[in-house]
Image (cartoon, rainbow, N blue to C red; front, side, top):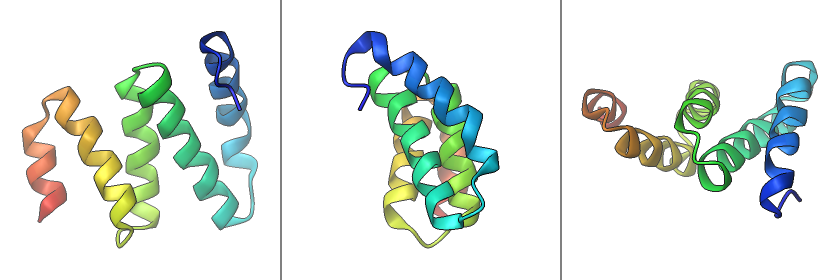
Length: 88
């Protein structure tokens, strides 16, 4: 879904429009993860990826995959204080 570069931005917009209206927490977590992935890997937008992964990490602090995704974003941004805080 949204593999073509020109489809990534509309896909991200669609995710942003629905994420806060999803009542099922597991589904909302999937949407947040998708926002992070599309933002970071397809569009290179660390700001949007960071917001999504931080929100997801707040909901799922024990999820190692979420922590690793957030760490990748923080490394790219060079926010080493936030990385240290994440690892504590």
